[in-house]
Length: 207
Image (cartoon, rainbow, N blue to C red; front, top):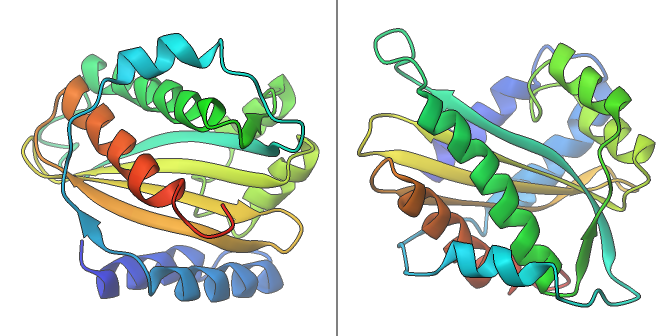
C-alpha cells in the first residue's frame, strides 16, 4: 500500500465518526508520523525463541505501560475466500510475538486486559476506526501508550502488516509503520512483525 493511499484510508476511517476533536488530534498525529513510513523487506528471525525467553527478561522500573488493543485481519476477498482457522490463529501469534519482543526489550510492560474493555472492543467499531475510543480504552486500562496491529490480505501472496502506537495523554499517534508480507504462513507473518519491531519500532527516537 503506497503512502498516499495509506493516509487516504486513514482519513476515510476517521471521517464521519463521533468525537471531532479526537479525530482531529489523531489525524494530525497520523499525518506527521506517516511522513517517515516506508515499506521494508523481510528478514529471518526466530519468533518462537523470542517468545520462550521473554518470560525470563527483567522489566526496567521505568518501563512504559502499554495497552494492547488487538490484531485485526482485513480480508479484501472474504466473500470469495473466507478467513481460515489458520489465519485466525495467526492473529494470536502476532499478539504473542509483539508482546514478547517489546517486553524483552525491557522498555515496555503490558497492562492486563479487563473483561469490561474486552467486551467493549468486541461490541464496538474496529480499533483504529472508532474516532478515539482507543484512547478511552487506554485510560481505562491505566496505560501510557495504546497499540494495535492490522494485517491487510489482498491475496495469499500479498499481505500488508501495520503497527500503530498512540500516546494516551496527548491523544496523538507516535508510531505508524507498515511492511509487506510475502506468503500466507505462520513464519512469514511472524518474520514480518519481528523485522518491523527490531528495525523500526525499537529503533525509533523516543520509543
